[in-house]
Image (cartoon, rainbow, N blue to C red; front, side):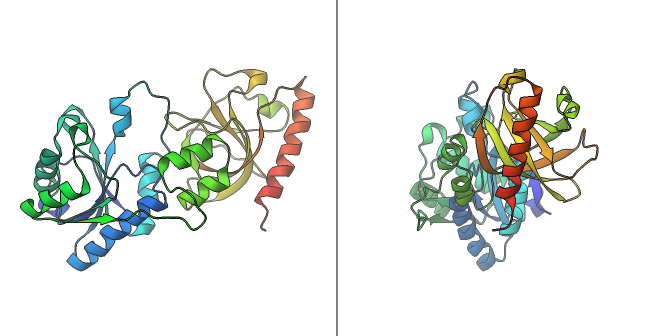
Length: 311
């Protein structure tokens, strides 16, 4: 189990001394994984814990409070994605007024050296930090030499198939409904996690009960119908088909993920589930009546089962 630390101030000695990778790491995609691998090598050489330093809220949310939802994962999903990479600690630091106002020198001195007591810091080739983004990998290396920690810089990772390995590239893929491309960049399917909430229960009237999840601060994928796999709290993985969007036939104020779990009849209200969006099947449509909608849902379910079948 990864230990999550939510501040850098007044930490006990046992929470200091890690070799860390630093960045927003939204998505923990393959490019992020290369930075973490660099930190992992240093942790092994130093016989130190492996840590990841990230921020909550995401710095973009702090500087652009009215920006459209853009997150690719929740903190809980981040912790789970980091676990198989060998990470021991997630330092999820508050990005607040103090943090936003820090110079690059102050961040290195007060947070990394003083607060976290890092022994090594790994960053990406394009890493910037500090007020006005004045800090660079080379600048961090100079600060580290003065403050007693080493620094490594991960080179740009090029995909052999020409994929750009970045969070923005994941967002572009998800926004366009290209879930295969998103999964290739992430190294796993894009997934939405949330509590199952009560809906209008209209689906039950046509034999299609759904688990409904609000999108919150997740970026908005292409609206439409998806083949899905949903991870239950007990670890079971259930195939399904989902409608994601504003549901034009019965309009919603906010987009909703409505998942019909195949061959499943249990109460999930109030439980937190995670749904992988495996394949985009079609865009949103309006139907003449419920009978026409039910015919299309049956067709969507058949298409989802085919998309999810082993190849």
